Every structure is written in structure tokens, then in C-alpha cells.
Image 1 (cartoon, rainbow, N blue to C red):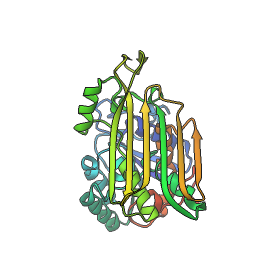
Image 2: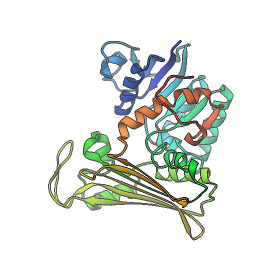
Image 3: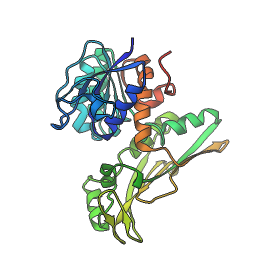
Length: 329
């Protein structure tokens, strides 16, 4: 029998997830939830590009009896979406969420993490936060690479993404089109920046046994030198193309984690590079980079068999064997 899936959140990522689920004969979409009035009453296949098939989209959650897992794609902030995750887990559904702050929530959101873990254990289900980052590029990938290292002294990850190839909401999220002053004000108020570098740093620290004594994150604008088109307008010289974001973790005076994200209109060439300093030094590069939207949808769907086989509770990616596109075995 195909694994029954509930879709929660049908923005660009949620729709990409739904489309991928429809390609897997071992999965079956049974319910779809989104608060948008424009989607209510339409069939999931219609809005995900698969034709008038699949469940009818509704504004509230009702669990079909055959459902086993919820694919949750509604927001980045755990503070805002924790009630949704608790409702899904308490109803007896395993949950795979693209909420970045759920990928390693114990430092920033200990109360929410404890509550979600308890609810999942009580219902006998598993909850996982994942995505391209956090969830893979800056944490799971370096951890997997370390399997052939005798010792790891430092992890260095540099991710370059040309945001010209990404959706408009992400371009706005990185400040494209703002003035440098408006950019810095938005960063200071917490309205701008990529969520996930600190979560990745904590995931790495746990995996390598480092007790961080300091973790610093910084976000700076990348300014345009010439007129540059974006999804909704043209960025003028001096305006912001995107961001240069870093996170650095230390153990006393020693830097053990260095994460850098350059995400901007026209940044490039896109690439993902991982360097492990240790015995031996190891280096891995993905030319062209990992496409955030495609990779996030893939890892969320590919993780389903691993999550169904995992122990109950709130887990992180490092707790799982590597997800693959294949069916459960």
C-alpha cells in the first residue's frame, strides 16, 4: 500500500513537494491544507501542475485514517508554526517540516523543542526539520564527508547562490532592491536574512563533540555596481543585490566552524564547497551549487522512509541514514 501523505502549506516549496510526491508510486497524497482563499476548494493536482486530481484543498487539518506522514511547509519561525507541528504530531502523524528553526531547535527554542519531542513520543511518531540548509549543505553533507576522516579539527563551508534563479519571496528575503541603510535596519529588526546558519553550526558541534564557547553570526549587504534586473524590477547601482552572511563557532580561542553564505542576484558561479581540516584534510565541491528549492523538496520527500523507520520523538538529520529517492526497503 502507498504511504499516505498530508500536505500542510502550499507555497512554492509546498507545491514542489506535492509535485514530487505525485511522481512516487509508493506515496499517495490524501489531504492538503492551506489558508489561502485562492486555493480553497481546488484540487491539489490542479495547483501543483498535475491536473484536476488529488485531494481537495481546505483551510484546516483533518487527518485521513490512512495517513502516515505530514509534509509541513508553512514558515521559517518555530515560534509561529510550533502549534501546527504539535497538532499534526498529536494526531498521530509523523512530521517532516521545512521550518528552518526546527532543524536544531534546542538552543534557540528549548521550550518548543521539549514540547514537540514530548508530544511526538507520546503519540509514537517522529518529527524532523530538514531542507537544503539547514538540513544538508552546511551540516549533513560535512558530517557524511567526515566518515573517512580520522580526526576533524575544523569545518569550513561556503555556499554561493545566484538568487536570480530563485523565486521572488526569496529575493525579497535577502534584501534585493533595498538601500544599504534599509537592509541593515531590516537585519537589525530580524526581518531579513537566511535562517539556518546557527542551526547548522549547532548540528555540527553536536556531531563532532564540540562544546561551543562562542557563536557569532553577521549579515552584510552585497551592493550592485551596475543596473541588474530582478523578478519585479531593476536594481540600481548602490542598491542591494543580496547578502553575505557568516556564522563562526569557537571552542575557547579556536575556530572550529566557519559557515559562509553568499546569496545575491548575479552572484556566481553558484557552488557549494565543504572543507574539513583534520587528518586527512578533505575537500568537496558541487559545481553549479545545490538549487535550494529543488533540493529542499527532494530531501523532504526522500526522508519519508527514514523518518517512518526512526525512533519516536524530535530528531535531527544526523540521526538518520542518508535519504535516497528510492522506495522503502
